[in-house]
Length: 227
Image 1: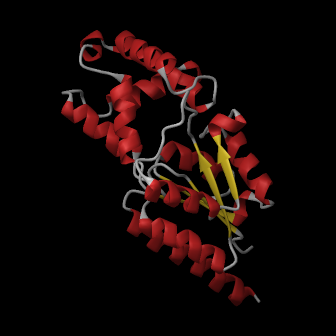
Image 2 (image 1 turned 135 degrees about the horizontal axis):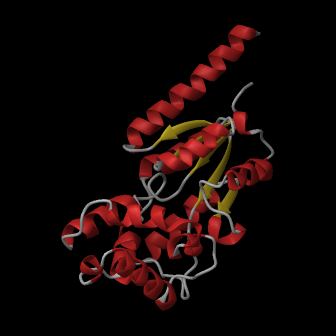
């Protein structure tokens, strides 16, 4: 069966990586590497980060206080030099579009693939204004390149819940095995693979795109050989 769709995570794939921003924030404040990631995972579905991404909290003072409290409960010594507000500002600064990914979105559509976004994101109390008109135009341009845009904070589900992948596939009319999914987080990819999706982990965006083009070409060759 041919691939019909390519589904992209946004942060860390199409845009700059929140994980990189968090790592730099940890380093700058003398916090052990991966402290935040471990905290988010350990908190489970009821954690403030997960609630933010399901749209149950919005980005603002309420979330900052809740996440700061999670940090304090996990390690009071870290809490003394941690600020959720400052960390989220660092993430926002990192989230610029990656030109090679933007061009890949264009090329995929030219080649007839359906292109969708599947992102864990959040809603702000006051949406952050882009730094300038050029950034605003770029963000609008990127969003317009997707045939569908599935946001965790809108649909009330977040990766790696299998339901959000099935929702994304259903909205664009493909079976999971007809889609390639790109993400920078292993647990998100694991859930997608379990449903039959072909997955690509994005560490370096250029390497990931090279793998994507190889994957799509290989499936085309296999289909031609069967015919």
